Image (cartoon, rainbow, N blue to C red):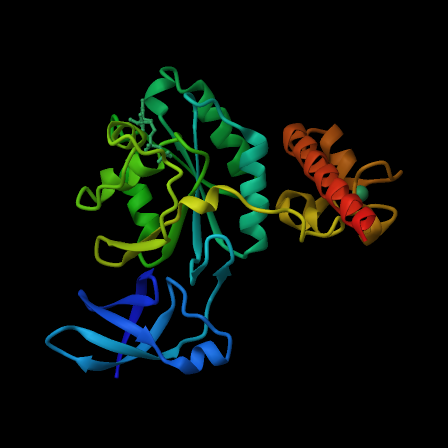
Length: 298
Ligand code: GDP
Ligand code: ZN
């Protein structure tokens, strides 16, 4: 048996890469019976059916490190949360939502700040970098125009299965094309020329770049649901709150209106970013509204 990784799945066929050879595989019927579908990203054992034609059968799915539901990809362990200093301007609420989602999935988080060539005096990128580094996140400020810090992005990808997350137009495809020109992901410009929108549903697909880096091209990662997060749970995904959770109502405190709240105090003293706290409240409200709706529907 050979071991490999599913890099692509199309209508019942799985494409499994084993040391640079790609096998077209079917999955054993047993997986269907067990209600366990192979996912892109799965590490699998395969048995050959036809060596010359590179056909094989998936015999075993190895335990998963992670499993994203939307898009359905297994074993992603790192997320490169990407947003631009300009064009489009940073959307910090969206950024914090990505962080919440990624913290919840237990992914390693790297923040990639793009298009620094549009920020001549580096004022915007410096202040954003400082804000998120203070929380404890790795921030890489890059430009595909000047090549600034692109090597660092590549280093972050080495040895991981990563996904680039971020709203459309921030430069995700441009970064990947810069690092791995062979891949040729459609950037906004190209897809306009071809006359197809960026939202044509493609299946998740993995690409190997460099020696040891795998990235998932997953258009669907741009949206996600908050409705399975509990109100009391949200604070865990704002990691800088942790050391200030000395609230009078302890674990019951959601840091909103409660008296004697350590988190609110830290915001007032400038120890926690006001903007992050406001986004926390905003997301808290959204979750609250969602739960309210669910209850009414019962
Ligand atoms: P995606 O939707 O996140 O994949 O974004 P794209 O890679 O398609 O880029 C969107 C637009 O931003 C394109 O017109 C790119 O040429 C442009 N762009 C990408 N990176 C940079 C950059 O570093 N600097 C500047 N000025 N423009 C960039
Ligand atoms: Zn509190």
